[in-house]
Image 1 (tube, chains in turn cyan, purple):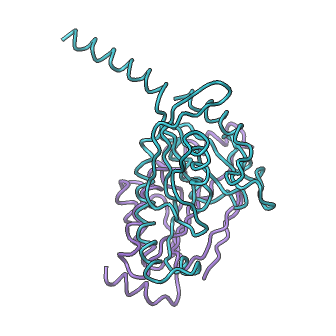
Image 2 (tube, one colour; image 1 turned 180 degrees about the vertical axis):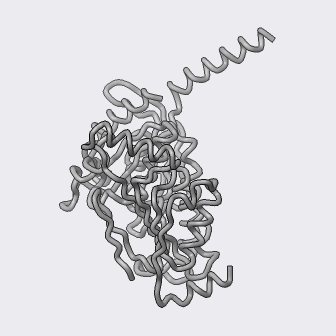
Image 3 (cartoon, rainbow over the protein chains, first blue to last red; image 1 turned 60 degrees about the horizontal axis):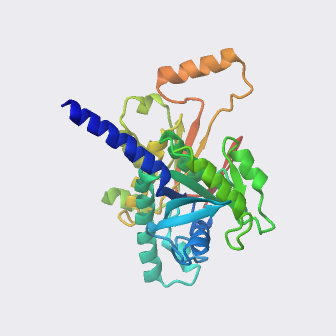
Length: 213
Length: 135
């Protein structure tokens, strides 16, 4: 009995040590078309040479949870191994007619809408499995969107470290200050996933945040 | 279910329904979400005193997604929560509102607005106001 207790105790300690050193599950969450996949692709390409998923101007291009295992991110001589988890955009409404505005046929649009609704359900289910989450927001959009607040509220309730990324800073309409004002309790890093701008600050923040787990 | 589908298929108007927090205080999460969705599916814009817990909000979104495609004409919801900003309040005021929230079992300083996406085109929100743009 005593041996069993000791065994479990050491097992727990060792698993925690390994958990903190390798394979940190880094999730990308946010509303549709904020640039989650673009950012995940940028990281994957920089460190593995491969992309994680397809991107598109049509919302809900990512309709299932996508992974990239063992991504060794190197920053200032330090290396951390992550499992990148790119999730479908979370929305409160999905109308297939919106997809038809992008010249999709009715059947394609309906299929896309069906897959997108399932994608949202899956993204929500995955919240419990994350170690660190990057909430990707479009810096040209109003940050006071309830979806953003709900995602961050859930991560806080689960004690998951959060980094807020204001993407698309290359666009004129981008307003990081508005995002900082909306989420004053969080680190906000402005980036352009498309052009790879300010990724150094992003990696630094991810490394800092990963130390907290 | 068919009744709901019929109602949603013939949108000619809507009503605004106010729900005091006391109406959902004693309900569990499943019952709360069921009640909220039944009001919204009845073509109503719901104004709820207080706000849901974060996990209830995600469940509401998840259940909404599950209904799209299963209930004809239902395209989802628009949702916004506005909370009372008590940053500049003194200790006594904060204590009072904290005590009131604890006694009622929810943040009654907040207001939650939920409407069907077939009626509400957009909810524009900033820290001090919510604008409802209707279709």
